[in-house]
Image (cartoon, rainbow, N blue to C red; front, side, top):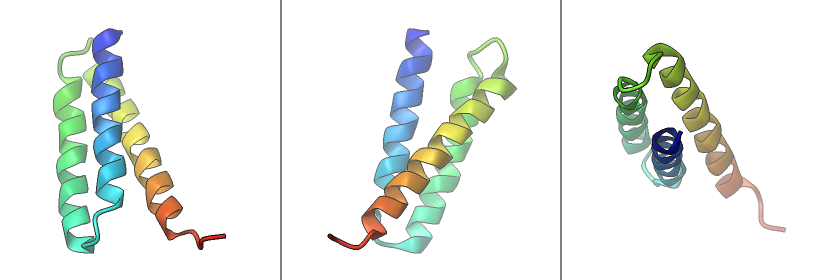
Length: 75
């Protein structure tokens, strides 16, 4: 479980960082690479497809939250 937590944290931290990148095209390239890395990271688990899906879900949620957060108007 420690490895899963570490992998999950590393992937979601990358997603949050990508959301703040100013260039849309660069964000797209980096997200594509990150989604591929979700699959690569999942290979070591007993059910790689299920773990890859969990990683992708976590990455997508984290990216969306960070992306929307930076675009909210300042109060």
